[in-house]
Image 1 (spheres, rainbow, N blue to C red):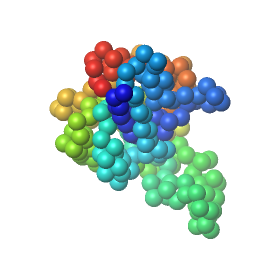
Image 2 (image 1 turned 90 degrees about the horizontal axis):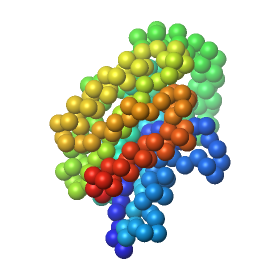
Image 3 (image 1 turned 90 degrees about the vertical axis):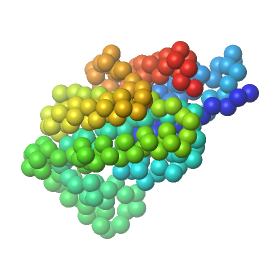
Image 4 (image 1 turned 30 degrees about the vertical axis):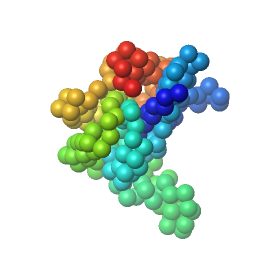
Length: 239
């Protein structure tokens, strides 16, 4: 039996299912595996999902060797939300409060965040000038490098997911996020077009049904993404 590797890289959008329903909450990577690995299939499709929470382009840049060394037949890139969303705090402070090891520094930082950042989140976003963790220029540079390294070092094809506009609740809490999402989508579209990479069309995705928390796919949303990707794999022979 022939083996094919599908590598998913990105942030928590490629991992989580909202709302989480035990034993039913499959992300689109798991659904793709189920859809491809049928009894009739003469190929074994191995899904390598190395996405992780809060990942930005800088985080992917740090694990580029790992991404390349899998030598996937298909790479699915789901990145940008953590880069483009406006923030009430700097990235370095966010990294501190998200550390698992509970040192006294982490405990103090979490206390500051709980009493200061969370209650005044929207105000602080505006005070910081609606800044994101990654600038458009930095995102474009690192994303272009990632595409180049995958294409130069592997024979794998690439599918890129766009950033889906946040709902009203998210935009109200962190204003300016949708503007950034639109700008970063322009970057993705430009780079994909220049490098003959498939940018997945998710115009039919509905925020109320398919990603109700404004960021992560619901069960229905994951199924729709799976269907779009499976269509490319089966009919356009992407793997």
